[in-house]
Length: 360
Image (tube, rainbow, N blue to C red):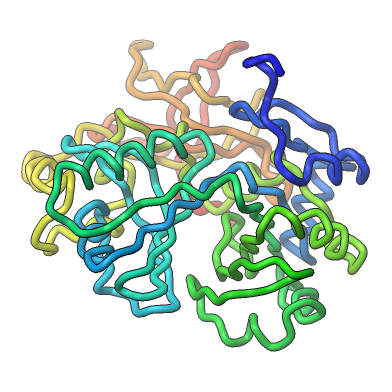
């Protein structure tokens, strides 16, 4: 296999069978859509859809000091949750910028699993291992990403469909709750999380049964969805995406993620930098915008002032199927005060309305 050929998830043949249009996404062969991005988007808002997120990674931390070690690594605070719950958090460098944004699931003080972003699996694992090796924590980190598939079942009717496969389980889970599952002899987890702003779960299941589970969900009426709808759904809710709104040049405070940074915690990697940034103030802010005319501003387009000088950039942009207009997120100078701002797109200079980052 060529080193340039994208990796395939355990569900690749299922996607082809069901008519998915496969593209190379961050080195993975994944469906961008099946029938229509708009149809899939609306299915998740009004009914229920399923996404293959198996390119995401799973790290497992165990040992006597697993809890204290993970709490040292993350910006949020594990003391906020109890076993059976999860926590969204930053994984930061010493300067307060992002290694990744992750979800940490607490099984017990000696058993924790972590879901990380696809493009960051190796980098995150190396970061955990490096810091563990330089510490006195008695713990172990395992990268088991190649063992599992992840199916995100999202939408207001998700609970109804899941009842056919895991009776009574969904109702026992609060948001960010998780529980162990079995399907077709394979083990895994149901996590009441997702990236669409709708009700639903992420099903982490051993690869052997993943294709059978996907086919069964589709047979039960769950609409297969691709990357296109996943991006438009997350953007309508104003959710940041690693590589766009957050990366290793973005600090957690300017990204609007102060709420996942517990500066009262005794210590964590990046805390000192964030305390200093908070005292000095940030230089830019993450904003939302709506575009009433074409074109839709896209990632990399520039915010400009009246003199035509660059004062920020667009980090994400798309057409909102619900609002029927262009929407986006971007970083703008902290001092900018207007209700509208100009964007220099590839085609023309245009004006957009600034608004809440949560669009629907």
